[in-house]
Image (tube, rainbow, N blue to C red):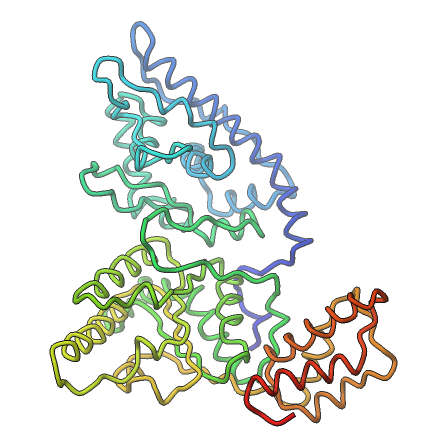
Amino acid sequence: MNGNDLPWTPSVDGELADSLLQAAAPSLEAELEWLAGSLQRRLAGYFGQPPASPPLPDAAAPAAQAGCPYAAAVARRGLAPADRLILALALAPLLRPQLLDVLWSRNETTQRPFTEFGGVGGVGPAFAPSGETACFLLAGDALDLRFAAIRRLAPEGRLARADVLHLAPPEPGAGPLGGALVVSPRFLAEALPGLPAPLPAEAGIPARRVVSGLGWNDLVLPAQTLAQLDDIGLWLTHGATLLDDWGLGRRVAPGYVSLFHGPSGTGKTLSACLLGQRCGREVLRVDLSQVSSKYIGETEKNLARLFAAAEDARHILFFDEADALFGKRTSVSDAHDRYANQEVSYLLQRIEAFGGVVILATNLRHNIDDAFLRRFQSVVAFPMPRAAERLRLWREAFPAAARLEAGLDLERLARQHEVSGGTIMNVVRYACLQAVGHGDGVVRTAAVDEGIRRELLKEGRAS
């Protein structure tokens, strides 16, 4: 089985993503107009004389439009009009934030925001809807309608079960429905392909999104490595079925941990990024400098925030240069050594309890503590590319605008120089820059050879 055989959410290139987004625009326009009208009707009835909270008419829901990826994703999940309205509400801050400005209104009696309008944070240029906002939209002040809305937001409701959206944990001091409406990255990748999803709004998360303009077919890796990446993709796609429907969750840990190891530039970060892209998951690259702290106990707090936010939004966590934090535990000679080992032990526990996917990357496998290795579901090797793989990398590295000099022998370069894909891209960057500088757009053999010489010197190797 190869990656193309897997029932994953397919990745799309930039041009195709643009066309699909354009196809989704009319449906989204209709959904947002429907949301605006529904909100206007709810507010008019709620503040009318006498106040009224009738059910919103299902007949007002826009009809699905053919050829629209958003409408198709909604139809596949069988979402009812009320579910669609909650989804449109959750998407409004991303697609049309001004639509919700009316909910910033203040109660003239209390001089405070209306409690029933909900919202998260209470500051910022855009209103962030919460579970309470969804309940007000669907129910107003009608208790029976509110019960129905709460059921729709529950973990057993269709929105959560179909991995469309879920209710984030409420902030301290907020009510039980005070959590933000969080749209699933996987649903977004299917319904709005190519549209980057915003990161969680939690402050202080020491991570950044990893993105790439490449696609799965751009990976140049050995068959064994690709097969192991397929295994991770299968888990991302079907892990919940295995744990819940098959009942394996009673016997195994809920998440998946993999170690990527190999020389720099062999594709570890790119593979993690494309796994997330293909499976509709955001990949967060953890900033170890922000995780580790010289103050006792702070590292644990940073990790707890990180894992909580990632699990809530179903992100993949990617730890680059993981041996800096996941390395071998030291012998205890003082209090700092003891607390350093406690940090490692805490990390082991947190990874085991994490319900998502964790990928650790290192250039040096032997630096990783054996206690971690026993807990990994896979260890994936990223070796230096062989000659045939290097030739493919050379051939695909040059942009279409570049014209290669007639004497530039890519096969010779692939045979003679055992370099990684990252090194090849550095050489191509240098040679193409020289071609632009010459004004004729021709990539010369001399420039490529000079680029290789510089890269080998950087790596401490004779040219």
